[in-house]
Image (cartoon, rainbow, N blue to C red):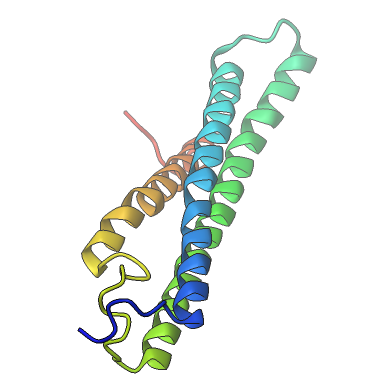
Length: 152
């Protein structure tokens, strides 16, 4: 192959680095979300199951018990929007590279600028799935606290 020892194009390098940068940000976002959710669930459970010693503290516990699921749901929703926006931007970078590269064979021997479609699906599934799962739990708590959902 004539292009085997050719250096990659500037577009290849820039696109690959930008995608790697976006991809590297997804893991820490999920880690911070999980840590924050653990903190929120701990506070919520403490407020739900602890018996306040005075009526004044009962009122405060009830107020915070209603606020914590709302804060958890909003933070989770914002994180989900951030994750989806990042994935959309990575897709735009891939499409831009493909359109500009025009199927040239010059860089076909180089690694893909991003993973295959199946690999990307499985890489992103846990990130999006975990975030949606947390959002579902917080929405469930909100609906249960307002007695919209009743468990018998």
